Length: 244
Image 1 (cartoon, rainbow, N blue to C red):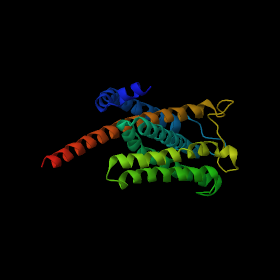
Image 2 (tube, rainbow, N blue to C red):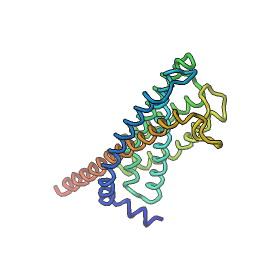
Image 3 (cartoon, rainbow, N blue to C red):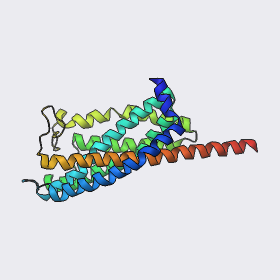
Image 4 (cartoon, helix red, strand yellow):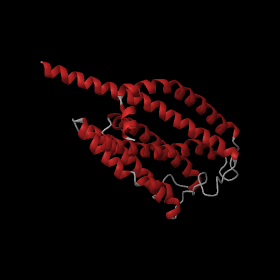
């Protein structure tokens, strides 16, 4: 297991692999995003209770999915970085954090826009919304930790610990609607008995989820490549200072 991980942790190998993946992920992002927006805005029918406001769901729900998925990815990458000392794993977690923060913020904003006509208020301090807000703070704290240390190795360790401690919030967000009474509706896609929404709504929702995922992969590749190049530049600058 460790040998395979070290094989893909080589920055040159990583850059070669991501160079091959990037055009496909970019193309998938454009195609799926266009298809998801079209089917969500023009093909999916309005809800019999919520009317046209239900279309916010096609932006809000996948954004919430991505907020949880990206933080989980960060926790796994942080664990790999701590245990096997993989620099690419640390850089991947670092690169993913701002993307996850943006998706989480988008989820909170669109949730407020959706909640006002449905609940009559922009915000309530229920379990789902509060735990999602905590997730945003965890993202921001993780980003701040990376900026708080001049030594990248110390920054990566501190940030990794926060990511691993904070991942406990992910299942809390997921099951909060089951554990506590909240205004937020319960799970209707991933349930033991299968999806509880019509295919006309489910299809564009899943397409948007795939589009967001492809978008994340595309941005992650760009950001990790930039982090690798920045680290190489830092090493060269330190070498020049030592030679003087």
